[in-house]
Image (cartoon, rainbow, N blue to C red; front, side, top):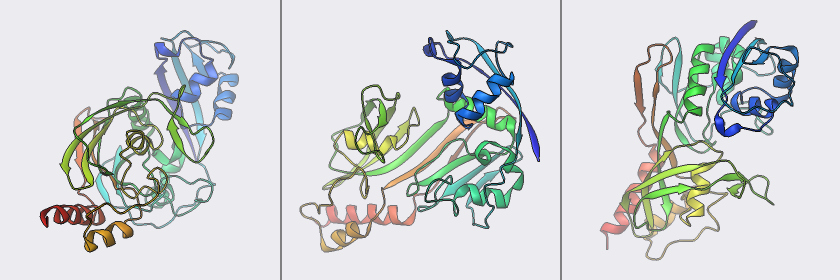
Length: 318
């Protein structure tokens, strides 16, 4: 099956001086760099309507137009995996992802992912970039994700994400007692020595996280976090950078330690909580077709709510 792609994106002014293939790789991130370079060379990806070489440098403000044909990717296997569908129409699908579900196939996770499930429920998604997945949340993070069902919707959602107009709010439990909310504006990139980790690094990509306190406990804090950007592991990295790592985070949480004064019940609960306490609670965007402002909410999962109850009981028992 072949589906035609028609996408137009304006080059941001801050990309002045960068090469066309580098800019295309950022703005059309759902396609591989090799595929984008081929489209540039074939004249299917143009600059202000003109064919250019991949290495030509742009100044910002140009219109990149991608007109190409995308064949369905037969390397992805459809699998009958249950989905918790929060909303669906002809353009969009919003799902509530459980803990443990990988979003996209990768090394070590070729099957059993959200993408495999999407292809079973909607085989036509095989013609869309990454089966319509426009943003991700980590394997052990729970909550809301939006999937595009058409190229028009895909284009609109990618554009909204680039313009930072998609509203994404999370709830988390962090280790330590925060005095108040704030903003973390620190660039994120690959950790210089530990390649499976991300870190706040000089020269990393812009990353902005807003957070505020919902409730304080004896040794933890329940917080609400809003993303302005969407970097890999952004909330986990920024909270760890503040020295308030997410409860249960196996990568950024450091060595497990029981807090002083923890009741036996709480101590047992903390030992059993093996994932980062992070939930994508609210998602808001402009509908690609109707242009209506839409917003969805997801209740906290059972393990998260149980942990909050344990933390509260440990305070009330004082």
